[in-house]
Length: 112
Image (tube, rainbow, N blue to C red; front, side, top):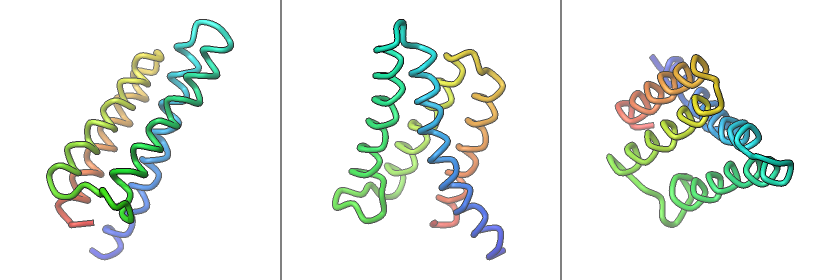
């Protein structure tokens, strides 16, 4: 069981990185011109990274805990999945959403 929990932690890190990539992909596909593509492609994941560092990172002074942490994490991952869907990547968005939410729920249940 310890190996499965360790794999879930590793998957959590990959899901967090994938959420940043999903937002960058959405930004590049959504922007109407080159400046908008670059701005959204960099700005959206940067905004998420700053938010994550402030409220979700384990060493943050304002780290959320418990059900609040789980809820915010699921909302962030759902937004990343919707970003993929909005960028015409339906299958990828659905797969990401399912994996990310299952990962978050397991991490919560296992107190990771």
